[in-house]
Length: 213
Image (tube, rainbow, N blue to C red; front, side, top):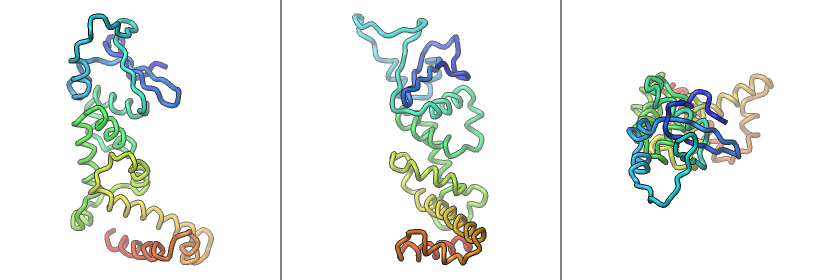
């Protein structure tokens, strides 16, 4: 399938991204990739052996990308062609795309920008944490970011704030359920399949949330 937004007929590189047996083809410009990615700069520097026949489609070489998400590439390529998009506030999914593609393909500016944004909303010091105000991460975003922690793309120093914000979501859900069911909150907490230690942590974090907020 051809990308609807990122298939330029004057482009000179085809990027095929395969995700779950679904392929999306982007047609972009080599110069756009080279100026932002050391990975692609080095790739296109390599002189192909004269006896090697390179795959060409419509006169363009094809770069195959496996193990990536189509949405991630749409985010990165969209920002490359429209830099103003990257100046706006980013969703958690966009931050993840910047981290994934930025790290794997050496889009250093995207990778560093994503880390900076995370550290602004998830500071590691208590004083900065309390002063973060509207820059704090949304609890739903915190959960989304923690879901990809196993990929090794999230900076270690933002995890405390992410876990705290994610726990805020759990706390809110518990108290919301308590009101809807008209039962004491402790009734819900005791039935959350938490260990006694985590139940104490849950209650302690709730009190801390009220102090930080």
